[in-house]
Length: 248
Image (cartoon, rainbow, N blue to C red; front, top):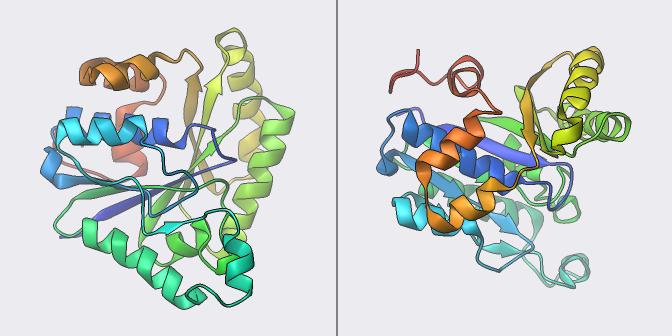
């Protein structure tokens, strides 16, 4: 089986990477995948609090690891530089092994990144380092706005591409409803000129319906909400290359 790995990175912590992961999982279920064909993992994290996406995966019986074997606790960088942790190659191997393990016999694995693309570079386990060790596609989740948002996207995605990542899709999250049309107009016009080898997948409004739907586990509402912003056919079939299950 050729498992598809999708790595979701973001411009910063709190930009809504897990929301995007949740929406994609909901779309996959709605497309006809069963829970046993899917998996979610956050192999490296800075937060050990239970997140809503873990609750969703548990309720829908999707295999998941929400707190991986590498946690960047306070003082980790000092300990690494002082030689008090595993070396780079072992840390990276452990993270990749956890992804491959949960991905065994799965069709799609969603990998939830930590912070921005370069987080973890000090120890050789940045999001980009892990992604380069896998056959994966990458979604970059950008912050809302026009000038600053585009500047940040160019910075982060250029770093990803410089390191060797390709097939990068871009989603902007938490966009205020009052500015959605304006932001979409100008970002859609300018971003392809700056990053021609990427795919702009869409803009998600900051209506926060996902917060309550996660807690209530209303899958139909989650997929309806997410798909109102991110077209399922475009994302899963045209960009990610998934066929079957009602996709063509």
